[in-house]
Length: 185
Length: 185
DNA sequence: ACACTCACGTCAGTATCTGACATCACGGAC
DNA sequence: GTCCGTGATGTCAGATACTGACGTGAGTGT
Image (cartoon, rainbow over the protein chains, first blue to last red):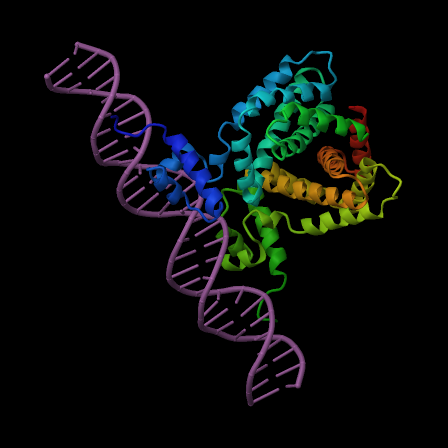
């Protein structure tokens, strides 16, 4: 037996998600999360910059994988279609995580502070997509607009997906959202 | 002379904007803002829910005026065009405030926490616009997408406007952004 | 005169987040 | 087999954001 129980970060995430679900985000203190994970408050802040970030671990990796999808998309595609293709790749990311995604979404949906952080992450995603589009030769304004439109479609698609029965694939939600978006102009 | 110097809220806003500009948002404490305004920390929190909110006073009124613009827009307009018309009305709001807008934008642009709040406000604006569109008979998904697209165009237009010389009107930036947005599909 | 209001102050407390330093199993060097 | 880092965690002290309870006194109406 090692000195420390393994997977401290994972235990913190589980404890946080449990407590945020049970009694709400504001009503749970970091000390409580740490205690449930068998750690101290100080250790929590070694793993997470703040109380919210515990729900957003892996979002940089998520962003990177989408940007890579955009970089691999056929050069002939229109900016918006390239973004659509990149976002469709996230389907594999979500495939068997619908239950977890729902739980996490419920927690975030119940608290404005967490929604702020969520928007921040999606804003960063839009910025990264815009930068990747510019690398494809799209001019700055078009790149930013296409990226923001794509992220908007993604948001709507995601909410649609988690409200759907378990069989419906994420791709369908994404494609529907983009089609509806295009029909609006 | 009354017991209190008048315009406490205005003094707090000025003091905050000054200090945030001079030494950055994180590096200024609420106690310092209050002291510069000749008040106490406790009074700051009577006027503003938190340290960030002092930069966002009036955003509800701003949102309301845009929503009213959308409600007054001709019923024949397409959802996206109705949003465009509503956002063009904000030109009067900004007309002679470019200097102030630039200063405020610089402060927000320099700090992620403030960007979070800014995105929150724009997200609320998008939600309000979507609700107003639904009242016009637009179905939910289309309404949300059109609202998000409009807000994206507004963001780009605003940044374009404050980077422009002083003569260029806000309407021009908004119209350009919407045209570019439409050309992307 | 009198009470009532309301803007602000005072005080005490909780929670978030940070820096500095201590501890001690583990793994390698010798 | 002993010694020595290394690294994950604990301990402690403190700054700052924010909140609730209550005090204060000039203005205001009667």
